[in-house]
Image 1 (cartoon, one colour):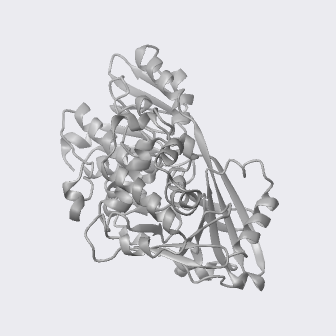
Image 2 (image 1 turned 90 degrees about the horizontal axis):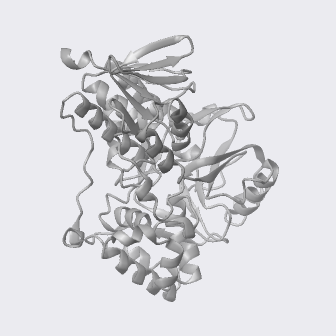
Image 3 (image 1 turned 120 degrees about the vertical axis):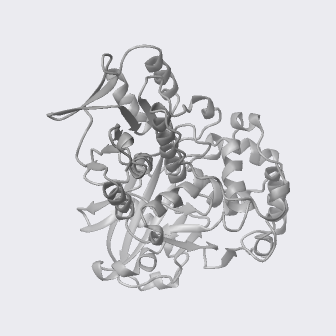
Length: 472
């Protein structure tokens, strides 16, 4: 640790992925970092906790990363936690009755690496494949500035997508990834996710699922911060934040404790920042942020955890077609080392953009999930449900609506020494753990500039492969 940097005190408010990324990068670069998190665990919206109803640790909802998520991967590398991810190069689509379609790469140059499995996909008819190929050719041309003002529903109609193509391809691939209905998805971000995950390279499209509970995985990042000399303060809420004009420092009150910092990173959700704004200095920066934050909204996501007395499938994960439930994760297979700690075989189901489930009662959702699983897996006939948990994340993600880019601020807040981070800031990515990690690294770079340093933490994208090297 350099003496000059160790004397520069940085507070990071928020222990989600954005805050952890900023704190880890800065602490490992020698800054005196203190992270404040109001919960008793880290991870933010990507966290796990002991559910009192089932007596087991569960994730608030299943999270995945892709090979193109270079900054999340780098964050785990910093914490020596790369083995926390189980990687797969295939996606299995299941139709009611059990028929499978598997998309996987072959030894062809990008963007043709998944062509063979696509052409033989049983879940799609010839007219569906022709329509999808037409849409992919549009994505190959890149993203235009006006795409941020267009919605994906109109784009699907304009490219002549069949209903089956929408339900069996675009819905599980993009509606789920962006956690929104198509009329509330910016075409720019639909193109961004599809190009990164399916076209640029086979490596970029790998799917990674955490092998441990989320807070345990990100707890390793917190441990790395402490090893680098940083401090982690859990159950610590920043109740008041004010700027001392004389010293140029920021004063944070947490309970009875008051401390001064040279720089503060606000690694909060947009609604969390909105709650803190009234206590910040009046003026143009506050008015600007109030205007920008007013344009953000949420989209819900629901996780359904089911413990059965037996294994109902040997698949690690799958897309379920033509049902309310969209994704299945076989947690007992993904986390086999934790199986002895469980009462039964755990299956987790995910429903993205789950607006219809929010008002439903818990038992109604469980009955729906069990009924839909029975459409795919014969073993359900004899399986007995031991217990269940339903987690409704009403504020799971921000909605990546057309035109939102104009409202996403960069890391500079407008106040000296006050930096913004969060997946909702201007990262070029939608609401994902990758966007959060990128925002944390961008915030760390902004902190470095505040001190006249030139720290660079953002990790570059994976290189394009094959023919994609020559396309826009």
